[in-house]
View (cartoon, one colour):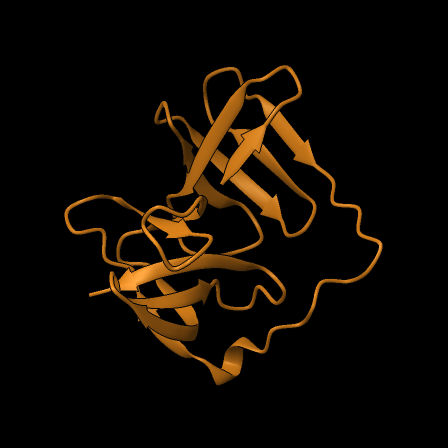
Length: 139
């Protein structure tokens, strides 16, 4: 996950614990631990350090479309020796990064497609209806 601030600063966070909407353990690029709570609107609270807090409010004019994750199969992310796995906005290694997953984490497989770079699956976190993260290459 990436948060862009108006002053130009960017913070990136990756999951470091199991999926949940209540106090999910996250790590920033410097290795600091944070707890994330919430869904569309959420709060990150730094553990240790200065105990910084980042609150994000989501204002939507229409509700997000509901995705029925229960009807989809699962996919386990493979980092091939890395702790994190990039999730892409399109089924291409050259596409923008839409999010990050943790190697070994199991996500819902929403759909799959094939191209010259291999088989790609669109994935999302279980129980996170309307919140789809991106594509991962299945090898």
